[in-house]
Amino acid sequence: MDRLTAMRVFAEVATAGSFSAAAETLEMSRSMVTRHVGELEQWLGARLLQRTTRQVTLTDAGENCLRRCQQMLALADSLQEETDTHGDTLRGLLRVTCSVSLAYAQLAAMLTDFLSRHPQLKIDLNASEAALNLVEARVDLAIRISSDPDPMLIARPLAPCESHLVAAPAYLARQGRPEQPEDLGRHRCLSYANFGKHVWRLSRGAETREVAVAAYFSANEATALMQATLAGAGIALLPTYLVHAELAAGRLHTVLPDWQLPTLTIQALYPSRRQLSPAVRALLDELVLRFANPPWQAVVPALGSAAPGPQTLHMR
Image (cartoon, rainbow, N blue to C red; front, side):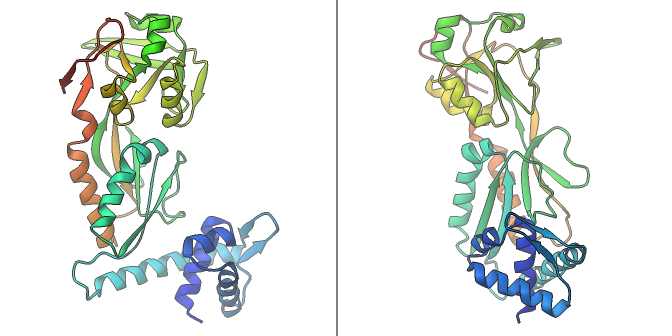
C-alpha cells in the first residue's frame, strides 16, 4: 500500500464528507477511494470513519489521524518542492477560495491567465460566501473582503474595495433619483445580507449620515443583487469591482455620487508563513501585482441628478 496516497485520500474524504466527492476531486474511482481508506484503517488497526447512507463522519481515532495525516502531507509536499529538479517549474494543486462575486468578476480570469503560464499547476477554486477554516478545508489561499481579518491568519492587503449605490436607468426614470441620503427611505432598496443590510453609512467630507434601509429584497451574494438591480428592482449597494463594467456601459447609474460609502480591503489570507510553497508564493505575488492597478478603478461614471442618458466618464 502507498501509505502517503492512502493518507491523502483519507484526508480528502474527511474534508469532503463524502467518498464520491473525494473521488471526483482526486480524479479517482469511488472503489479505489474506498480501498485506500480501508487499507489505511487495516494498517492502523482502527476504524477512522463512520459510514451511513447519508454522510461520512470521523471517529475519535479518525480525528486524531486526520491531524497527523495533514501534517505529514504538508511535510511531504514541502520536501517534494524543495528537492524539485525542474528549476522554477510550478506544479501540484493549489486550493483557493473567494466570494462568488469576486470569482465571477475578477479572480477566475486572473487565475486562468496564471495557469496559462504554469501548465504543470492545477487550481481548485472554491467560490463561496462561507468563512472556511483554511486548515481543515486544506485551503492554501483565501481572498476575502474585510476590514477586520481573522487574527489567526496571515493577511496581505491587495486592494481597497469601494462600493457605490447603483440603480438601473429604467428604475430611476420610473421612481426618480434621490437627491439626499434621507430620500433612500422612499425608494425600493436591495441589501447585501452580510454587510449593511439594515443601515447604510454615507459620508461627504466631514459630514456623515446613517440611513435606515427597509430592504424589500436581500441576498447573501452580490452577483444576485446586481442581476436584480439590472432588472430594475431598485437601488443597491454594490462593490465597484463587480459593477464597474455595468456603470461604464450605462446599464447601471450611480446614485448620490457625491456621497461615499465605507471602504473595505481585499485581503489575501493564508494560515502560516512557514512552509509556504513556491506555487502559493508565486500566486500571491501575481495577485499583488494584478490588484495594484485594478481595472475597476480606471473609470467610474460621474452622474449628477440628470436624467438617465449618455454618461461622462472621469478618471479616478
